[in-house]
Image (cartoon, rainbow, N blue to C red; front, side, top):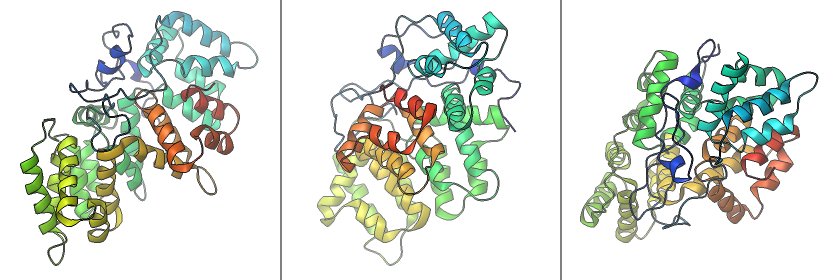
Length: 379
């Protein structure tokens, strides 16, 4: 079942706020349309696109993050609608024109183009695009045309619906989002599916991993960007006593600290842990935990230290070996292109000695490949 069917989802007034796009000089958003942006960065911290500064080892600390897609300015949504209409009218499809318009506009701008398209031609742009495309290229185009909160909501829903659970998706989304993003995604989730995200997460997970997902779904992490070094030392001691210094592990202490402290504060806690023990918090988590809970806690540690590296590793995993996890590849490319995909590409090159571009070119083909490269600013 298509959750968007029969509903003008691109007009749903649920969206991330517009602080980030405006910093790139785009015009004021149209009232009533969802927007792409994220909470504005705190003074003195880089804009990370998640509402949090990257702490402890972020390669561009003190600098702006590097999106690969920024709002075009000047922007004429009616002209873009006409270009797309021409690309799909008559025999054949001008895929190049479609790719160049959609990969060079922000998510908010694409939604405004869809609004103008329906105004001018009385047709739904997403339906027309779906009828003119197919396969993974179609999946990517539909993702680009979906408001980000609804896109995330659908990814989370599909990860928990049916038989089995895709815990990797839950970890990727829930462990990387800011409070604001989680709250907006929850609103979109309920609007589309009529249930609460928290309830569906709890119903599809178990044990301490369920508790972690529940805590993260509250969207209630501290956003005080002042680092209290004394408290960081206390929390590091608490983590040590809850893990390595006792028989068995008190998971609730790890849950409380990693789900409630601000990202800069967590960076300080991890540093204090290193001072106390002589080894890394990541090593302690590996020895004390297993399974999905271990993966989730380690993901939070990695996101605190270097979010672009976290996503670079996810992209690498999506393409390595036989076959491609296209859904994971599409999700990361679409959701990070306006935030920090440039940084992610840099980290990919640094870690693997090959460019993200070369991996996409080697793993994907046709218009799907060209559209992905377009999101990298390379088509």
